[in-house]
Image 1 (tube, rainbow, N blue to C red):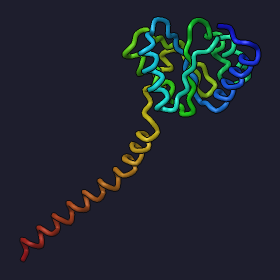
Image 2 (image 1 turned 90 degrees about the vertical axis):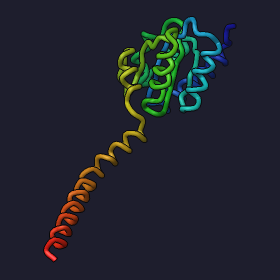
Image 3 (image 1 turned 180 degrees about the vertical axis):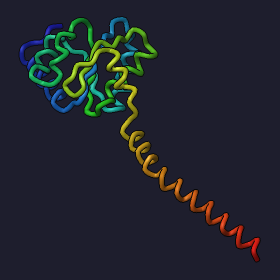
Image 4 (image 1 turned 90 degrees about the horizontal axis):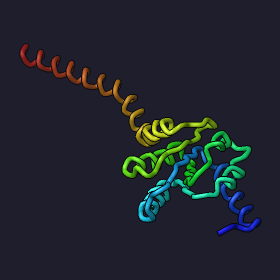
Length: 168
């Protein structure tokens, strides 16, 4: 079914707004995926704050024109699903995790920080731990020297305490 001019302008406006807010775009080919699998993918994406859309490629190219996502406009051919996310790794993580279990979803390209990524680049972006995990690792690194010092001082105090007990 063809869209009229005002509907096309509305789609372009919506996608332009998404692109302005997003840090990451992932493009994947979905040829051959069942409706049930696509619904499952959309639910996973919605739960992580990723917006997945099936768009006409010409409308998608017009919507990202002038944005940092324009670098992958040449990849926008064929049946594609577009994943936009405000979180830097959420879109890549959702699509890459789903692609591991469903070989029909083929990651085509992505954009992060204005730089085009190939399929391997998107998978590498998806392998980065989440912000919470990185913060927990950082806290662990910062706590490590203090806890080691406390263990050494505790051992010295215990040893010193043993020496006094023998002398008495």
